[in-house]
Image (cartoon, rainbow, N blue to C red; front, top):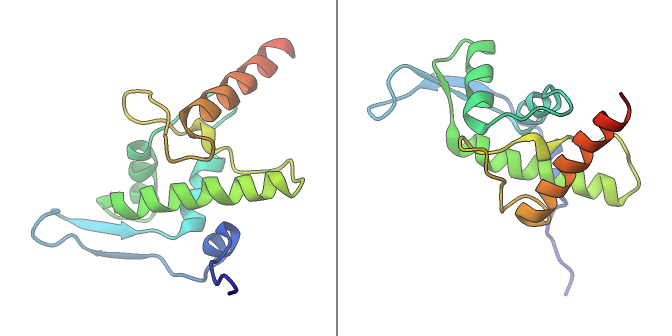
Length: 136
């Protein structure tokens, strides 16, 4: 039986439009419903050796697109898609991938759902910082 599972890259590339909607009863104001590419783009803006969090990414995108907040559920899902797509690209030989390892939670903890889990994310971040220090 043939698998119909999409690649992570296909999920990242899926044509989708962003929109700003009314937050409803639970979320005051307006909320950006982002696309996977918007999340990926925000992650690519994190400088080497620095980290960010989903909350900061959400705040940045909300401001950029004129909303009060960005959907936290979409942000989490699309961060995972970006990370998995980046690993697919790395395994295919690409060196220009989205630096998902720069995204940690509010307390600075690594993401167990990223490729390779928390240990792999920590190693990638340590490697990046080590490379920066050795090139000085």
